[in-house]
Amino acid sequence: MSIKKSFYKKILAAATAFTMIFAATGCGESTAWIAKCEDMTLNSGVYIFYQTEAYSEATSKLKEDNEELDISDIKLLKTMTVEGTDITQWINSHAEEKVKIFMAVNKKFDELGLSLSAEDESTIENISESYWQYYAENYEKNGIGKDSFRQIVEFDYKKEAVFLHYYGEGGEKECADPEIGAYLEGNYSRVKTIKFDLKDSEGTELSDDEKKDVKKMAEDYLKKANSGSDFDELIEEYQEYKDKLAEEAAAEEEAAENEENSEEAAVTTAPEVTTVPEETAETEESDTDAETSEAETNDADAEETAGEEAKVTTAEEEEEAEATEAEGEEEADVTTAEEEEEAEVTTAEETEEPEETEDTEADPYANENIYKKGSEEDGYQPSEKVNNAVFNDCAVDGKAVLVEDEDNSCIYVIKRLDILERKDFFEGDQRTTILTEMFMEEFEKMAVEWADAYTVSFNSSAVKRYDPFNIQF
Image (tube, rainbow, N blue to C red; front, side, top):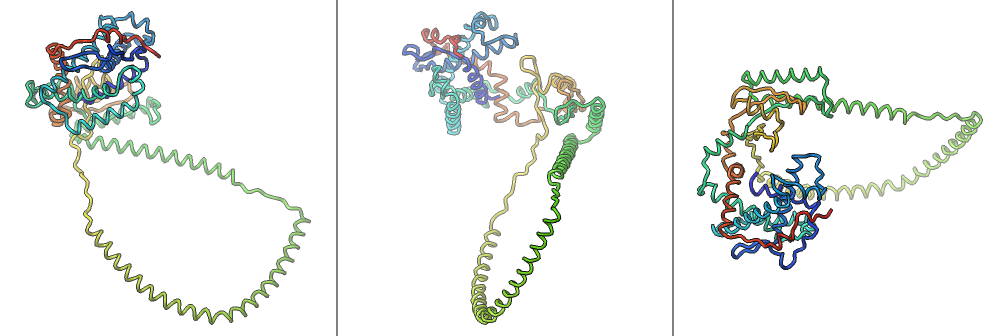
């Protein structure tokens, strides 16, 4: 994770801590600033932000040691220690160190004559405005103003610029590609996998017989992979198989629904039979005959009258029709000519427009996953058993292996590739991310040394005032 990207994680952690935060944090005149460094004075809002971050980190560590711990029990928390240090002291010392690094890096940024790009400035502004809309109320009531918040956002960009000045290309502590490569080989694995689920689409565990069939299929794919078959083609083949099963299941479900709907419709639309008494039926029939006879008489009279009127109007209608037809032919000639001209223009325009083309360049790293070597502290991806198998049992560019992941009810066929062939890890943001992992701890120690050299002094009244356990719920 690059320095700039880590900001989002930092904001979320602080936001979480704000669900139980400082009650007495309004900044008085003597406590409005937290630290000074030469000509630079830092608002207390920045310290409060780092204090909430440290509070969140401290309670997370305590929860790791004791999952049953009630972190809302403030009296209990005050009695606890983190890494052998009283929790209040641990939180405040971590916040103070962050402030030192903040001030030292800002001073060093100016000292080195560095600057942020217009794109970075725009991004900083957008991020500040976006987050402020959501968290302004909590921040402001706890003494963090909008200007302090923007400084915190901007700091991560400045920090990355200073970091790359030292560890980036041409820097005093530049890291060469072979060193990055050695780090990648020891900490990351590049793999392609085929995952065979032992649960159905609804998450229900398969029967023992079904699991045996799935395992047999996984073993067949393993044999294909180790007999020279292209692994990407095997991935595509299995995906097509899964898609086909999904389509068949959907079709069966749709057919069942249609059948059920048809049965319901048949019941709903059954015709009703009405019995009419004989006497009533005879009466209605008599009335109908009378009405029919009268209607026929009236129709005959109407036909005779219409025939006489038709004779009178036919001649006039014929004359009008001839005149209308002549006018229509003239209009048709004009309209046809206009339509032909428009058609010619449209055709010419369509012909002149260039055809749109899409960039169809294939992804050189399609179907790949990058797994970081797991640990108890950082966790395991995608699971402990699979992660250990990848790093211990899978040889780079060697044979594929089969791993049964009981915890996640699935089976993997895994092929490990050479991570040094991933050129994208040696350039751009990916390179920065790796450098950050390798050297950020060293860089921050260096920043603390700068702070000591710059003589960062703290406002003892402000530090005393902002007690992390003045919490409101």
